[in-house]
Image 1 (cartoon, rainbow, N blue to C red):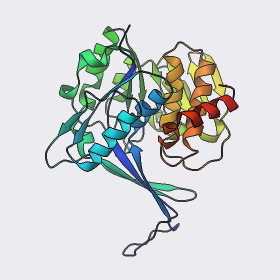
Image 2: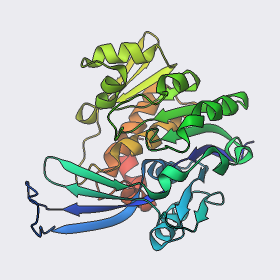
Image 3: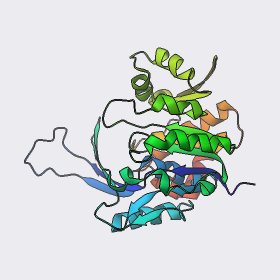
Image 4: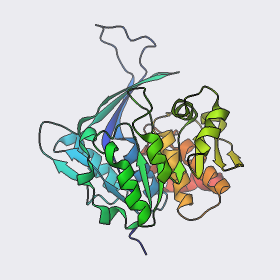
Length: 311
């Protein structure tokens, strides 16, 4: 039996979230936030943490700075039950990344200092460790600037070892949506964009056309639709699942939490309807507290949330 259900390689940093900011942010003014939260951030770490909270055995490789932010992020990930033995702490001028989220009522600004996110390379990866699993997940394809030229090579190796692979690109800060993505999709079993990302990647404004194009590239396309839930396209088959209603607090990390919920069932061989239902449940649950992982730090609360919704 493999040591892990899922392994990941990617970014590890914190999110600093500021709430209650003015709708307009004029320059040269001291603007006051009403609340703040410093929490575990980064898409890869959120997926890893929440997969572990949902009962999966999770291994994680990353590169962080030798600084207090890196220490806090690493402690949070370990406390969530993720194996961190292969996370590298590297001294030097480049520090652990940090994302500052300016959360307002109807929109948000996301400001990221990438730091060591850009520095992770194929040489940082222990392939024996990564392949000691049934599944591998990669997040933030466009932030992995050091690793991205070798993602195709990595995926080929993992597939040869019998792993299934999932990918969530997240946003492209450069707005280009290229970077060899189509070349690596040939190795991907589950592709997990949201509706906006799907259209940008496919190069069209019509979601249905985007789904048709992307579904030709991967065995399973899963599109997150926000308040409309999610859908999965497998060849000519379409599966839909409605969103889970909740008392909404914060959208940070909802898409990554969906990935964790979906994959927690996918790696157990559940059918697609079950996978989608768990994805929607996990994504919704994450919004009931600030940040992408805070809700998942309370096992009893998570169990009650699941039981109330029949999962």
